[in-house]
Length: 398
Image (cartoon, rainbow, N blue to C red; front, side, top):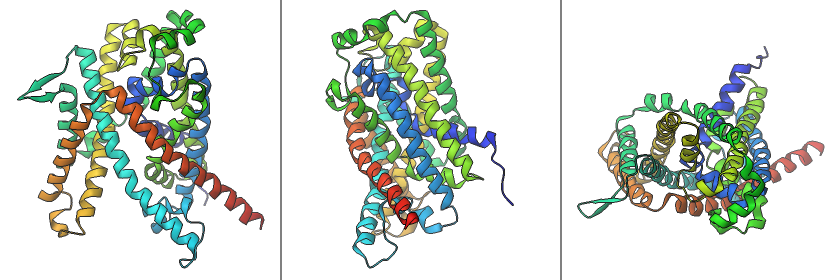
């Protein structure tokens, strides 16, 4: 009996798509500013390129997750389908693909750990900007209240398995998108005259562009933005597709998520450009925009922003801890490395301390340095998706 496509499920999958992609970079506005707003009016066109790519890759990955839901091997290794072009284990195509797939499976936890560093830093920037707290030292060690708070609650969540709290706070994704759209539309209705001279204002302020990309490569920035976001999301998106009752739920859910995410992005770019002189050098430009509407909204947004960062940081710290612990399983007995053991706790604490040290770097610098590097890896993955789709069409015709 064929299952009926549920509109509620489509909205739910779209919301989950958005919630997973959003982190401190998007929610603070720093990510959108570096990849789009810093390129002036062309940044709006770059955001539409990102929207199309989010839809394409989201549909491809989530629908494949649905198609392979009854395949335990592919469910455990979601990259295999995109890199292995031969089902014959003895062929070069199989082994080359398997090696690349395995590298990606280990690369993703490393990438997610770097995202944890950015999340901690984003929390530090938010608290510093909202409360006006500068950098201090504690026993001669650099101390940022926001970074310390986020590191502490994330570590506690990993050590004590507070997954339910993260599930609840994870619902802040759609709320963050709603607030972002509300703030962007609100400030544009208040005064959008700055858009007429946006390019000149961006140049004068000297907004940081991701990876120092030349302003003529606004279209490439749009590709790069999706490339690093999607590559780190493959396991999650494939699993989400597998949970769909029908293929249409996976298909339309990914479309809804990609469009909603970048609709907010387009509006945010326009708002940044309209107020380029005020937000151009801020770590958390969206807080400045929120304050233009009302101080109460700024307070609400700051709280939601910290919750959103936590809902991203804690699960990613979990993934990184779990992967490193499994790696140590080759050297130590499982009873010393599985979740809930002393070895697992040591790994979690060590990774948290490393992430804290890295997070002390400037938030804008971490976003502009780490994400583009991950994006270049993601572009290779995009090419593999396209090749796999072409390969599938050719084989069908054959």
